[in-house]
Image (cartoon, rainbow, N blue to C red; front, top):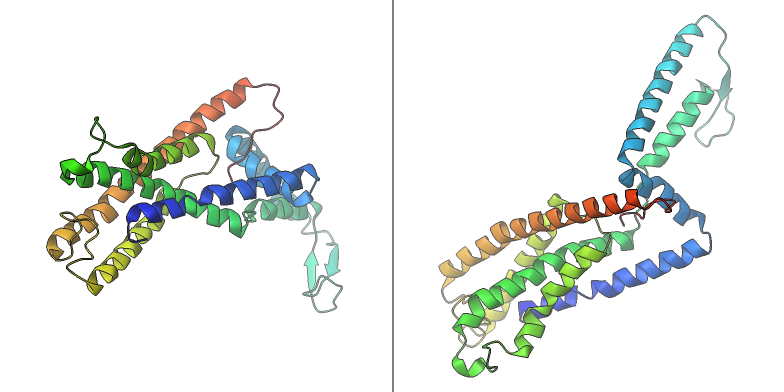
Length: 279
């Protein structure tokens, strides 16, 4: 539990969470659940049909302009009013003009602004983002700093790298890269905050673990040894505030590349009725 590798693999349990969420929503979609249909229609399509969105926005602006012109023309005419209270029932104290165009436009705009993403989707999204950065950090730290300092006895295979080292410290990066290529999770640059907080949390744990026995509880000798605090602080600052943002930018570029490839393939697929959505 003291090793960063263990923490990284615990985070990769989000694969199971994402699979459960995907199967759950697929089952609801097959049953014709209206909430799932509304989520696909309201949230998914605007992200994949940018040109149609611009046309819709232009049409909405034109309708709003026509509405304003109609309101100016109707100023000299009697206005149809209804009386509403806070519960939507008739009330004698409140009078509001009702225009059919206004109601339809406001309803459409409000529906488009509703956050349809559930809490468990957001949780899976956060784990997805943190696991990508943490897995690559584990691989870089082990093969870049820890492995070169191992004794010859610890380098068991003839190639210098044992199968155990490859499977534990290299397979995790391969898995997250495959997930980036195959999943539909969006990536945001501002979400670099989550892996940065995760890294700081591990450092707090590492310091606490070391403080119980400063001589024996050194997890990464020669690299993360708090008996030499200045060296450790420099390493922490580099990993958390330099390497992590760079990895997040790389993650974002992978996401953009995946979206570009998907967008081109979707345009070529004329038999498809609509594109799949970002979850």
